[in-house]
Amino acid sequence: MTGLPLVVDHVTKRYGDRTVVDDLSFTVAPGRVTGFLGPNGSGKSTTMKMLLGLAAADGGSTRVGDRSYVELDDPSATVGAALETNAFHPGRSGRDHLRILARATGVPERRVAESLATAGLADAADRRAGTYSLGMRQRLGLAAALLCDPPVLVLDEPGNGLDPQGVRELRDLLRERAAVGGTVFVSSHLLGEVELLVDDVVVIDRGRLVTSGPLAELRHETALVRSPDAPRLAEALREAGASVEPAGPDLGGSALFVRGSSLEVIGHLAFGLGVEVSELSARAGSLEDLFMGWTRHGNESVPIAEERVVV
Amino acid sequence: MDPMRRSIRAELLKLTTTRMPWAFLLVLLVMGGLNAATVAFGTDMDGSKAFLSTAADQQSLIAFAVNATMIAGLFGAIAAAREYAHLTVIPTFLTDPQRRRAVVAQLVAIALGGAVLGAAGAAITTLAVAAALPTTEYAFLVSALDIARVVGASAFAGAAGAVLGAGIGIVVRNVGGAVTGAVLVLIVAPPMLVQMINSTASWIPASLALDLSGVEAEVAAPAAAAALLLWALVPALLGAIAVRHRDVA
Image (cartoon, rainbow over all chains, first blue to last red; front, side, top):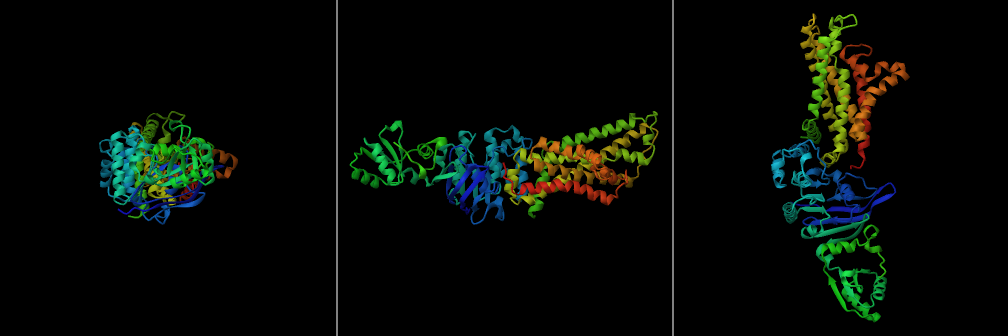
């Protein structure tokens, strides 16, 4: 299986006066599982829809490999997607839903049964989709995405509503696809699950890129600094171009999270200022900690590049 | 198999894998039953059954094309609008992102569905009338050729009505709104148009359907077919234009 990179290149999307995706750029690499993270309303689903030709960008472009999704010779055989949990006619059985897709894509009908089995929905395949639980609808969406055995998967919140066994199966499946070279791009709010699943993350907030890259590297990108003169040190670090924010009450009022600056530079700066530092360490927090830091301000959050934190 | 044929086959399967066709078949059976009741129990003002006395009278009774236009119009409106209401348009456009082709495939499948409905309606009505006539003093007088014309006209009118309704459904995207729109265009608006411009009386869908069935002869059949097709293609074209750049969901 040879996956293709997914490229989002300076994409902007507006609905009226509201900019929901703002000059967003990132690349999703094949052979890896990439998590797409962001608060509610941050533009994840809209970005995925633009990537798949369901919504038109007002600026920039999206590509699957070197072409837009619409230009692909055989889009279904290239990209399997599950975007909405309710994209089924409630009166139609899961099997018939897939038979329709099989006809439209030209894959043999035996793939219907195989996909249903892979997604764990074989027993309920002949029930009407309107009777399915959220988890079963997720499984049907996954079966549809896998129908043509595509090298690229784009899944919007695929773990929502799945039971623990389903989450485990989904994780194993996606990891297997990436391990054999497939491209897997998954949005999710289940950070604990994402942490176990992904190799890379793309984090957006208010439609703008906050950070992206291998999760293992990003985990060590943040430094924890503890100093009795934290405000002064924070100001100096900001002037040096770093992003600084309070570490929160759990770590005490004198602790700072610093991004965009190495431990050496922070230590050197503190020494130059004559500021006492009682702790200076790489912060390898959980994804949830990192996510909260990246999007710390909730609805008022702004991308890190523009953050100005007063300590 | 080329993508268009694949899409049409998929769209046909969509139409036959829900209960909707059975609901419309039930409507056709009820209408057939009403026609049979009319034959069995209906009378003219003088108490006679003279309305059944000639082949032309009976052909008028079995001419289903007007009903076919309206019933298939509702069928098309529901079939197209529910794609958006149930978000099944997402897998449709993911499978075939060439939206114009996807919409044409949908319209072709819905037209075929409308044609089947129209033909089935005419066949059921003909059978119902024929079955009820022995309760009267009249035999079934309509020739095989005229029955074929009635069935053919109903199939054509059904196809046209379905495409008209589907075009409205694609534009409106809401099942209730699409049904309302189809009723407005097929039932409410034509008489109002005739009131405003008297000369349009021969060119409204109902009149054209009667011409096609051979019950009236105000417009020649080829012209009537072309005019009915035009009624269908205008909303279909609007739908195809609307869907081209529209964001989905």
